[in-house]
Amino acid sequence: MSKAPASVSKSGTRTVAPGAVDHSQELGHGNSPAAWTCVIVMLVGALIASIAFVIANTPIFIAGAAVMVLGLIAGFIMRKAGYGVEGSKLKNSGH
Image (cartoon, rainbow, N blue to C red; front, top):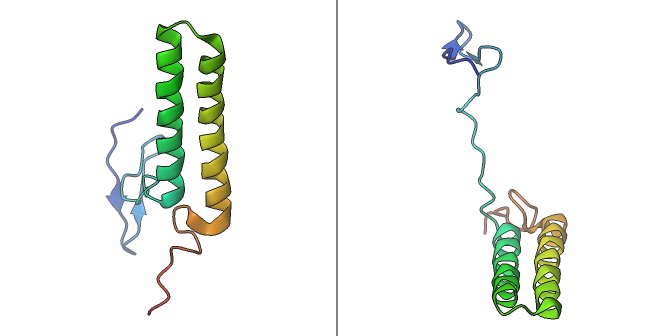
């Protein structure tokens, strides 16, 4: 990857060298109810699967993996319902 810096043109817009990463754009980092729900449910599933792995219990391990998949599905459904980053349910209506 090139270490070439971004430059500002006379019109005030930033141009980035080819292959360089533009760090001026806000990423959002997934800070939303959908993302938090997804991560928390998946962490609980990972905890269940980890404990099951240590005690060598296959059915509980599979149940933990299923909880992780459910967390992923819950996050996806919440994002589609408007609770994701910049979702319709999170926009300030001015009240």
